[in-house]
Image (cartoon, rainbow, N blue to C red; front, side, top):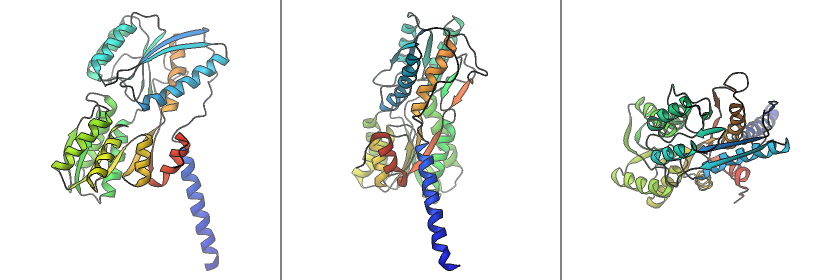
Length: 339
């Protein structure tokens, strides 16, 4: 019986590793096909505005391009504007939406920069007859008249899950800081709230700093350095977007800090920091699927369909938390990076 045990253990380890690899690979799904819906027109024109020019939204665009190619194979041409500022700005998004109203677009899609400012504007647009949807990482405020949303519906949970992992790693004690991202952006604010609520559950954990880096790696780096100077015993940093894990990791390496970092998404530099153990874990969103389903949903909305059997009011895409053991596979899978 004893001689059989190693084989069983090895088999279990192999099965576990294979299952984990499948889970990690499933974090981003590149295999999509258009559903059976038959579009009513042979040409559609859309306008999409999102928070900031950044690799995260480039990944969303890849999914859109895939859907666009598949429609073209069916003889249906889909054109679209995909517009964002170089720095996150609700004022810029307001201007873009005003401009979009002057164009001939079948659907206008919005990744909401600030729900308090943009949601009322969306309501006014819908009341005026525009077909407006939201997409990507940030929906509009609850009760907004937007037709549908495709993206992450569980940002609060993502923030809570990442912070729970951090707390467990720290044995539920120590000082923690949060880098939020863009002020007013629903996804960032919700993740930060999930983080704050989780930290508050544990009496030996203390939230010592909350900073907004506005989706800038450079600003996140500066803010992380500032926090580390002011709190030399800092035990952990929760990062609520794709930029700030990189900025925080640079600061931790630069200062020699032992602060544990958790954060969001699949930035290539962040994955290398994960592989090196500088970052403890990352919550990876399926941007490709978000982009693909956004375009497919926009076609249905353009044809006058409302949420129901054809598409849900909110279409959720998953977040998968990955750790150091997953980093090399993810780097190879997403970037062909075998270094």
